[in-house]
Image (cartoon, rainbow, N blue to C red; front, top):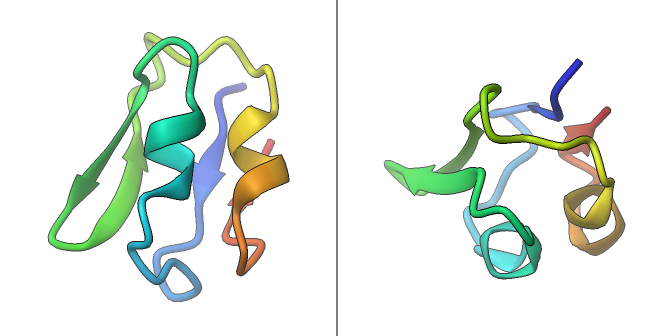
Amino acid sequence: MAAKVDSDSCVGCGACVDECPVSAILLNDEVASVDDSLCTECGACVDVCPTGAIIL
């Protein structure tokens, strides 16, 4: 299962976008979204999210 973003907790900082090694995360309307087909479940985004908005 790919990473999921809690849109209520996401502050749109972009840390996850910069950290994702496969470019599976984009900011849409200042909220992160994960492309399930690209996500490799590495957890890099989870580790850098300052609000804990991303889970695997």
